[in-house]
Amino acid sequence: TLGQDSNFTVESFTARYNAELANDLGNLVNRSVVMAERYVGGQIPTIDSSHADLEPLRRRAGDTADAIRKALPAFDTVAIVDAILSLVREANRFIEIKEPWAIARDESRKDELDVVIYGLAETLRHLAVWLSPIMPDKAQAMWEQIGCKGAIGDVRGDGLTWGGLASGQIVTKMDPLFPKVELSEEAKKVDQM
Image (cartoon, rainbow, N blue to C red; front, top):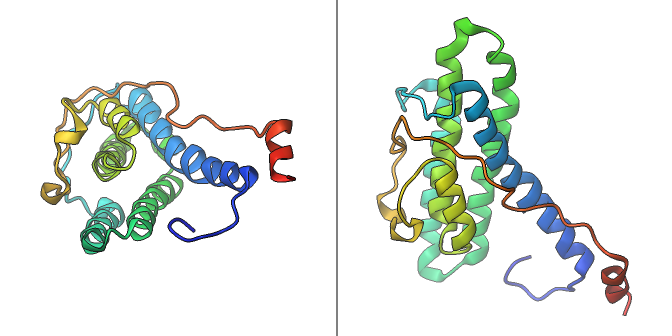
């Protein structure tokens, strides 16, 4: 657990990196940007950000902000990271439930698809802001991938509200934020020492 004494192994570190960063967060960013490029022409769609379909993401984003604001005065990094990862998991669950790839096959559901894509991009905006103090370069890359301008470090979390992502921004796919790591034989030997 982050912030507590524990046994460290290269294997457990690699497993956690691959699970939480490469699989959960990295794939969320990549899938969201790729779907925006493929299904809405790479442009953040114009929608009503209070749309009922976005309630799970909107609520979790608000819960994340509340948890971070509560944890900040105590410098409780464990609670902060847990809150952020909770939002990541909710966004991944949202993708699996909504199945944007299936919606995209039916042109009569374009408005529904726009809502899904906007919701994912808006969630990435929130994640980028909350992650910027922890991993500024990765947060900046997320910020740029969803078409936001300027330095993420200049954006304050205390003014972050749902629906602030401007429509019309152009998404840009970049290299994976967190490429999967394969454990080398040498690294496995370190754990045996």
